[in-house]
Length: 414
Image (cartoon, rainbow, N blue to C red; front, side, top):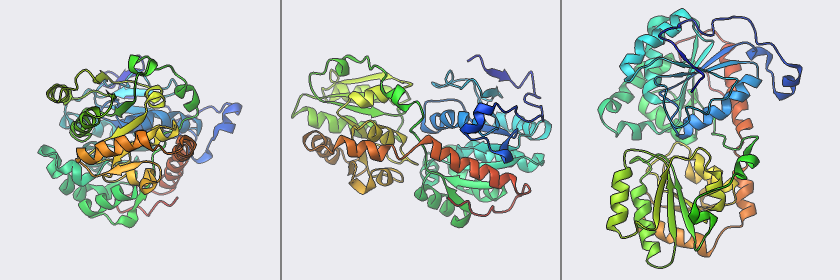
């Protein structure tokens, strides 16, 4: 990860106030005069392989094309996507293994070299950002983007239990608040006390300009290169939220009826538990967990169906990606994105959360009565990264047009 700049040694990085020099060719790519030369910092714990991290890595070059100087601000220099930062984007690391360690560094960021906009997209990090800004003051605008259901995060216990209280105390200090779906926005409003009318909605984008190139990449997994029967695919971090236990139970039920296989891409703490479950159900030879894959589109293109077993989601990026590949989809009807993406069941099968028997039926139906691939592709390709970037850029323009404030922002439309 050569692009990392150590803030412990250099606190004044990106201090130039000079506007970005505009390449005439770049004008065709969307230079926005109101944003030209403005510094945007995207704050994340690390560049893990999750949906939010992938989204901002895809959005960052488009923000640069609009004329902004873009940096990732990370607590730690780690994660599956650590080597995927575009050349036009800087990386700064504050070396904070715990969020409380990041707090003083965030205060320093706001005081010594404040960006024009700092965008945070992880709930606990957003709390730290808003508290640090309240103490530091200054002209930097803060934007909170909510990717997951706050009430579900609270159920994780520990510090997360205090999230609603902290959000009630601090969220109104943000210059703008947005969420990835109407359901996430409504949940955030209920938990934080912020009026729903003050929370914008920006759906995630997944279809990039190089989507076709990524889609054509070879998939080297032997079960997909030399198929002897249907293959199901799961994609996501190996966490309790993704509930791959239910997927493996459902797969075992299907496996008793036909010769099928299951691949789950991702890494996380539940790996040992999932492997043990597969052994106990006698399907260990038909289930493979090869780890994190940076570009899963080849797997999606080659699999017979993608199955998402999540307990909750803010959006569900992998569903839109799989549809854009023309691949069948089975998903839990969890809060809050899948039903929206799948059109209430028009473009994929929705099953109850945690119900492996219904999931098994949905998986079998995906093989026996598939939806037309062309219809699925058309639906998936509605979720473009360009449209998503345009929503963000309009929000940035609106926020910068107003003085930095600590009261409720007016609603972002569009």
